[in-house]
Length: 210
Image (tube, rainbow, N blue to C red; front, side, top):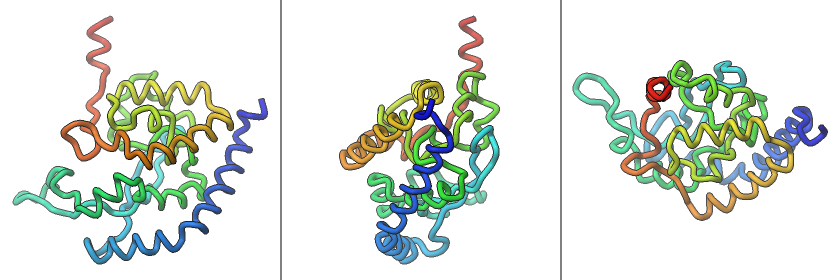
């Protein structure tokens, strides 16, 4: 079916990401200067994340947290390292803008399940792991249906639903609703967390019910 063509999805990604980078070049430069002045170097946060079929890639975002550690050299909790500027960047989703370069490189799509941590891979159930059957996205079905206000299990169920049902019209709908959700600043963080608690897995719980 034409609407589920990966080639057309890729074409839409390249065209829209290129246009967005041209349109947002000056605002991104301004944000980079703010990050540099408030937190110093580096301006960008880089981290290995799993992409299509679990293949690692380097995600890039604007930095939102300081590198603060305890007496043993361990990073302090996210809520203690998140700066006021970082909170604003996250609440407006402006910290995600550099991911447009990941889209141009073909590592991400504009729409897809969010790329999480490499350490989560062995914690997924087989059904949850299906979220990696498509490229990760800057936004996705879970992001417009609750974002970080959802539980991990709810988010993964929505991700798998997207894998089974995506088409270009759904992607356009998600992009449109993402703009609205960002303006409303809905679902930015889970209760009591800067973003989401660590995903520790659901396999034991599910095995206990079988």
